[in-house]
Image 1 (tube, rainbow, N blue to C red):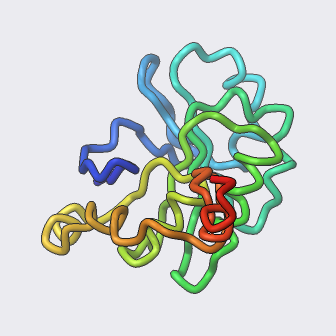
Image 2 (image 1 turned 180 degrees about the vertical axis):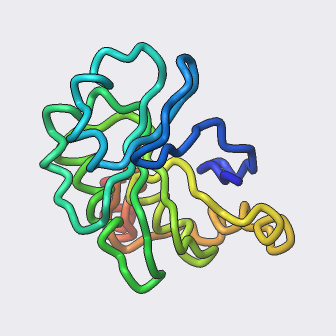
Length: 165
């Protein structure tokens, strides 16, 4: 189940292909980076929606030339204590100018949703039942003042105090 940055739960309309799995002609699919690199020529001309699953130990700059081809880039949180995907999201948005959908997958926790959104994530793979029961959508509004700047361009407390906001 997906939770978007507006707090709406919905079904995932992307199919996440294994490296040896064929794709249907018209479906939206995500590929592993290994498969994209191996079969790039076959996928480059595809007219349907294409997404990429980027490992969290890879610098996003490696995608610079092909980044525009992906409508969705999924960044993985293998454990909630592993925050490398936060940095990847900021780099993709700020330095590389990625405008497509960024999705957090893996060990996504309610307490981290707002921070993920502030780093540039648009959607989050979550357990739908748990998200409903714990009202995960409210996590996006639990704080409205921030000390640090982020990709959401919310003015920091310091900027507000100085009147520059």
